[in-house]
Image (spheres, one colour):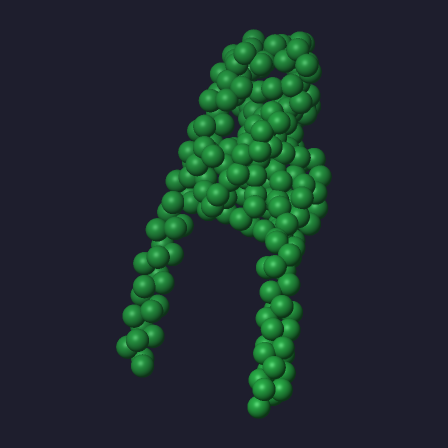
Length: 210
């Protein structure tokens, strides 16, 4: 019996360890993919200066793809990828500051609704995935179905399978996306009462037939 338990534990470890590695690799890939995307109207740009905190700012991007930066004024950011935006801002701020240490973060506007605990509009980091959005909204409710999660983008509903572990491009989010968690079917939510009723009816029928 003890040998059987050890075999089961070893098998579980073999299954679990690769899963962690895949998740970490996926997270890195999500950040790399995000750096290659472009900021859009509705996004927010967060500036964080290490030595000049007075320049820190949270900037909205207007419908023309512009944002107003401290000291720099209005810049059109929509044609640039996030990676290019970071390089451009460091170069521009170097005209005023010596070796500026600047972190640039682009936050995306994501709606999370359906069967989540805290449906709302959230500003999420560009590298966030469907899993991150659902977690930010408090997770799936007891009535929600983890198999009915989708992204609504430009009027199209895109089912996302395996979203809890998938960190691939299918789980990437764009500004303006809606993440929707569907409801469990009536049969699944009422499975126990249905089974209990069926057992009682069967038992009663057998008693009558005796």
